Image (cartoon, rainbow, N blue to C red; front, top):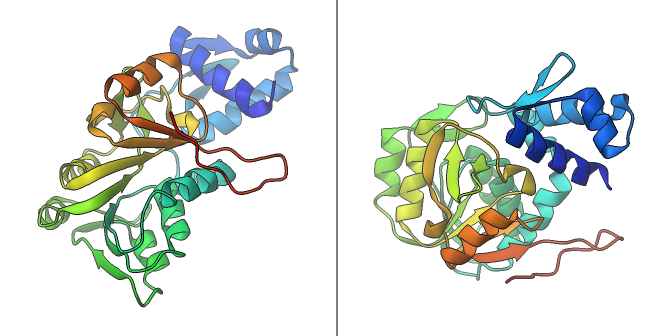
Length: 266
């Protein structure tokens, strides 16, 4: 079992049982306690687990991990997801892009497109795309969140409600296994809900660590999406929720040489 597979299983086990000791996890996965401690430290930094003396518990879901830690975590997977999502956006399209490290990766992948019109509440996305002279980049007004360059608040919501675009590119903090979309900041959620309402097609870009992850604010449900772009097949309950909502599932893969992902869907 790879380290990433083991960490995914640790998150699922801890969220199911509430707490697990380092020794029990080491015995279960056949690795040393030191390896489990490193796994827990990484998962704690990503906000997926709460680290305690002697073990790990479920994250309380009250706050997100530090932006820099989120940006660096699973960077390769996020790039694969972003390239796959960008391949489904045609030239000359109009789109929203919201706050998130994976949506920022999508912005980088879209630089190779032409004639795009982008509305965003993410200063990092705007900076990435503003260099293309054939792009039209519009920034929503509002409160700039200094932790990540996101723009939130009533002004941002009112601004977004003026538009109807072809695609909404959205990130998320967590997806409950029943298909509920979750986030940490109610102000960010209200902006994301406006994006969802005003997009003809809504694309969610999320790596596998978001599956089953707890967060306290409800954004909506997967049935409101057109497609989910991710790096691994979701757990069966979530996959059933996607199928029930007729949401396209696209899984990005890389070959052993790190080649660019080939689109796959079901």
